[in-house]
Image (cartoon, rainbow, N blue to C red):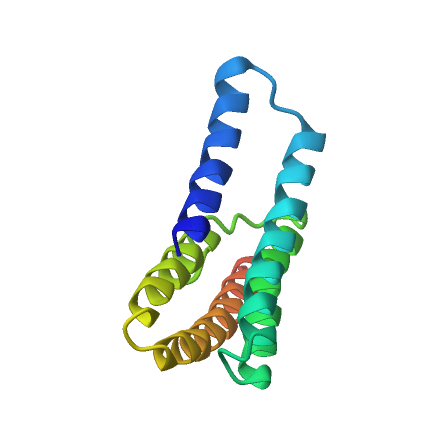
Length: 140
């Protein structure tokens, strides 16, 4: 849990530091996004591989997490702003997973249920983003 929070904190700081030092670049933005996706997948894969959740729910959480980010990237590439659209942005996912990990020290089965919730909420977030995108591109 602590490592997840630390990872999220460092991720938030690197972009801020780049802006403050004037070293923001498109390559840095891409590298940050790619490393975030790897981080998401590795954390959820580790939970799944360790048998702490059902493999189907682990896979659904991984795919959902990746699709939340992918749907935002595709929409923004098409000119539709997606900031704050949906329940499960990366920060919320990492905070939720860290909290569930901490709580699971007392009741291990809660980690599996946390992955179920994460899987459902990420899929719902993708639907929210698709609906938002559709609404934006079909405006008269």
